[in-house]
Length: 363
Length: 146
Image 1 (cartoon, each protein chain N blue to C red):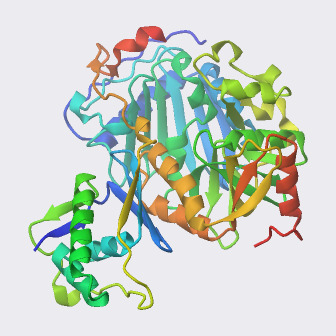
Image 2: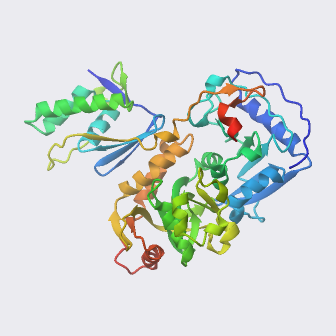
């Protein structure tokens, strides 16, 4: 942790809706907090150059695990710049919230600080402020103390900011996993408990690569593509015994009474992580209890019902535009129920057979 | 006449063959409209009153007037109760400017079905009540547990 510094707190008028003024004030606090400890890391996410500017290693290291596979030192002008800091490790003092308490809405949305240009959330309880200025493609990620960032946030850091940045692009963050090879793969979608993580993690023992376990970035195009967002996997503790190869690498083994097991894939399985691939299908796992795995034709509607409600309700300020992008994605690919059997080795086998073509599964 | 509008932007909708999926972003529910419900929904969304919708459908499916009119009215009441549509004082558009959806003539009237799924609600039901501390930021009282 860095040494504490004394930073004068800017004075903001409480009760005024001035997102531009607040954003600028916070940027100035960040510049002071990061003086002498600024760490800049450049990533390529969804084909975009994303520059993360951290105030110190304490918080930078928390973001590293999920995004390390997307580091790109050759990247050019940023399409998005995010300033990331906390008070705890820098001694910074964030200016008081300029909005009255009644402005805190559902899912952390701050009324009066969300419009066509500014996107603002503050998550009470984990004390994370995220703010995006769409005109400058600049964002702020502030947390009161980096040590309070919960494990799930380290598994998908900045999910809201990335969603806001990509909303007008043919890109859509989707609650889904993705497995395949560089030449093509499938989206694995389903609600919690559907077998999504079991399916993606079963592929660790195969020739298939993982582009994501929980959230990926889908490119809506004539030939749909999936971009990896986070090289992490989360597994309900009861399911860990089925994956003995990952048990030594669980990052939070002493907290599994209240948390999912979190595994940083790039750190422990770097050869299994891929930045993306063309999509060939959407597969919707269904746990059958039977031994064998098989594919059963499904509809675009089934895929939409598996992906859209969870995605739209997870992502703050998701709109009809996001729903429509998911709809287009679901219509542009064949969809199958993946009736996942208890013999985990069959799961990647069935997916691989589909991907290699020439099987009865090709639509 | 009873006019309504779709409760945008709180309600996000997408249509598929024979089914429309609605997501209520504030309630955390999602819904499936099936049977004749997607058609009735579409007519409401195009500015038709409940009465106009009932008349249009009874003209397409003669002999089932009472059943159809009752079905439209019941669905509208369900949609209101779920905050998916919002009453309007007047027609949102002149009747002459509305285009009405085409109905497959070879089909028969099927009762509207509204299915509700509430399993996502927990995402939204975090209690927003909080205290503001000396730094000017809200905190939950449970923070000592961190």
